[in-house]
Image 1 (spheres, helix red, strand yellow):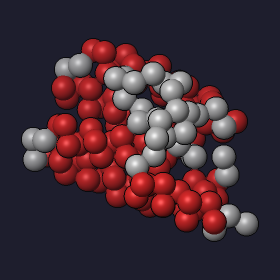
Image 2 (tube, helix red, strand yellow):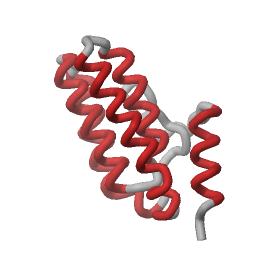
Image 3 (cartoon, one colour):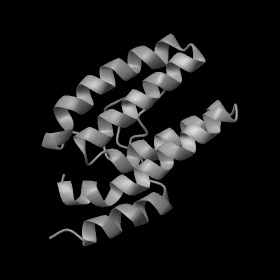
Length: 123
């Protein structure tokens, strides 16, 4: 995946991460995780962003005391760090331990629009 696409989606992913932090601070962990999933879909093009989102999911798992989520995220952090740069990411996957890390998933329409706009800006 292109780094220019990654740059164009970084801001949108950062907004989703900020929304996740705000929801967590309000005591809404399920809402926070939904924002993390959206950040994951947007951040898949960039190794840095992809790892960052999985780290935030790991921290979310710690706050929820979810061993399953934490272990799943450790596996996904390693995968994101080593596989993103060569394009081995399942498009649309939401990134949580509740789904297979290898399963492509449908992208929500609003996120797909952002991704398509970013791709259109590529040189």
